Length: 226
Image (cartoon, rainbow, N blue to C red; front, side, top):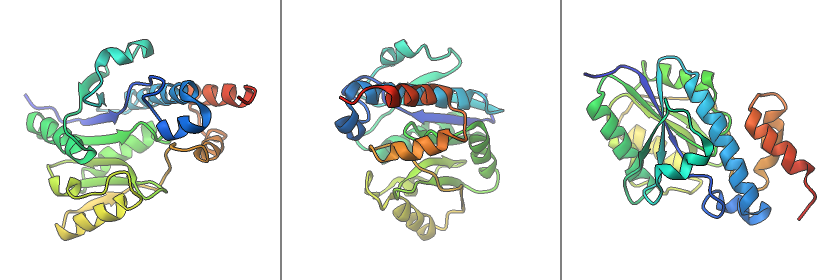
């Protein structure tokens, strides 16, 4: 039996020191970076679980396993699945293919764990956008994107993209135009990759409630310099 929900797929590494947020860790240390990753992940899980008519899931890299998330005590209604593929594009395409094969009436939305601005409202908006267009995207200020969703399989948007570069969003827009795929873009936002991004985080948290991430930032700012 098929389901007709928005399936929310949080792409996340387990927040293990030395294995997550490597660029940020180079400046603040492995333990602090992993602590931030854990706080953000839990806030994002909380947001996903609040979205009406949505199924929250976490997708972890092929070299990890679900036991790596055990210390976080992820709620039981959030299922964990392995990603499959050698690069990000292949992994996302396979996630979409698998879910739409089994649930063809559903909408699949993939989000990154580096973006703390995802909220109940923005994720619900993404699902609603897929009632009007085949693809939804949310650009990031660094030239990538923090969210992509599909209501039908559109593999072309994942092909030939220079993942990790500042041209990901531009290249994806070109694929959409070339293949005449109708899409909707949500408001541009930011993710947390490097030390300078913590200033964006401070500004965001001054006006938005992300309790675990705010707790991490308060402790980080109060700690003496290394």
